[in-house]
Image (cartoon, rainbow over all chains, first blue to last red):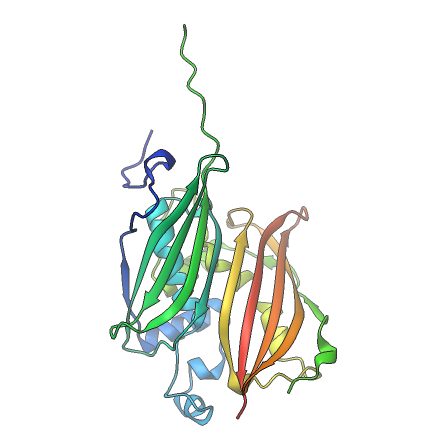
Length: 151
Length: 133
């Protein structure tokens, strides 16, 4: 029984197609909450005075919060988190409280032999500056079950 | 400059006991709250169960990374299986490279996380950038 989901099946995926973008508004409260949930309480994320003394414009979001947004965009589209086998990216710019960051992605390729789909992704802020680039996600679909019909 | 003789140093975490609360806290923090029926951690939750390895590196007094000027530059993950409440996951982190590029120092940290049956859960590679003051 299929759940009510727009998740694509492997056969319907096409190289070049775009994934639905995902936009997130980042706040001081979210950065604090992420620090608690992840354990990463580095003061550059939490202490404005410390962050400035370290040469930053103020507290910055964890890079892994931005990568979590990219993760969500891909797994929302896949419909199942367990299909994601690889995720990588380069943190190209700082994310500050108040920023709106948008994740966007395109299917780069799919391989019917391995049933793997490679997705290129990028995250940009409200000024269009990339905060995560060289993003790649890879999903693997389970083997296709052969239909067994009585002859 | 961090002394390159520390390349090869590794860090082991104790078993991280994955709880429903810990997964839900992470999902709420990142705003990814969709549920797949059975509770499955978002793959980037790897940063939570592996975090103690990063923490040990950052606070190693002998290696003495300049953490005040350290930012996360790149991250890669390979996910071998889904993570659920009840999993116990150990992570090994290994400092594999220290390089200089202009006025930056690049530190590479490789991670391998395994479950109680010693099956791989995920692998990771982080690149940290230390801006020289």
